[in-house]
Image 1 (cartoon, rainbow, N blue to C red):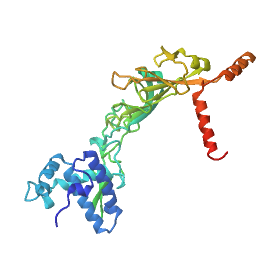
Image 2: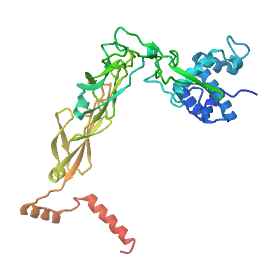
Image 3: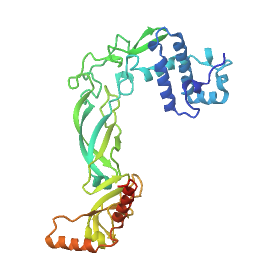
Image 4: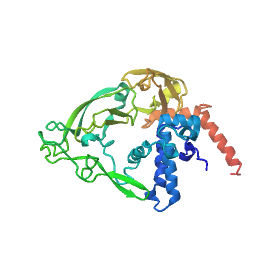
Length: 381
């Protein structure tokens, strides 16, 4: 029986990248894993087929050979090939794949990116929320933050053992950090419960860190916020996260930015919008007004006669900077004609007289009510 195409098995295109391959394999393998389908021979066979396809396509050299020659690339006594065209490295590498993709599914999980020799493990990533103003987002800034985190214990240099002593090899897993058990067709590898995957146990722990190799401390860090950042921007500080266990590498610190609302400006990408109230007299007669800009300066805007509410005036290049470029967005002035309130008797009389003399001064209003009259006439009102 002819073998199915590996790309078809995983449900991906031939141009799929590593991330797409891994995602497809993870989804299908969880669906057909024997632990999830006990006694189902078809699911077991499907799982083996999926694993074989991923093992070939995840290796750049094997994938290139498969793309050129198909299944024939692994048949006919290829060097080191075993049944099905795969060498002895296939079974051992599949253990790494399963541990990487299904650690949590099978009951064990790597700590902070994986087990390391000597029981060291990468520290966790940390998140820090920072709120800045719109003007700070416009200009950029350098900020000092205080972050409570775990740092390497100086007493034991992160090893967890009291100075002068050494960790002991775990007797449960013999230093492997994992134990194996049979589960149907497969041998499942799980994190050692005695040493939590470290491969070693601390018999004489450091008194300052209680064997963890790290202590909690508040750190002062400098953060550079570039001009043009938007709400939700994430800034990564590599190696500034939680210290790793027993000398492992530190995680990363992620700064999540939020921008406070501004009293004048609303932002849309790199553009700014400013709603400016204009008196009825200024809107009718026209004139010049001064408006604030995000850099703290003033801009003069000419208002033509008969300006209506909603009219926009564009100030080119007066918006926000575009991140990592020399370009700027635009600023838009949105006119809002204000109806007079708190009229004096004289003002009321003048407006009354104006209303009597008005002819074709309000075309939108007159046009609307003319259409409304036609609308009502259509109903015989």
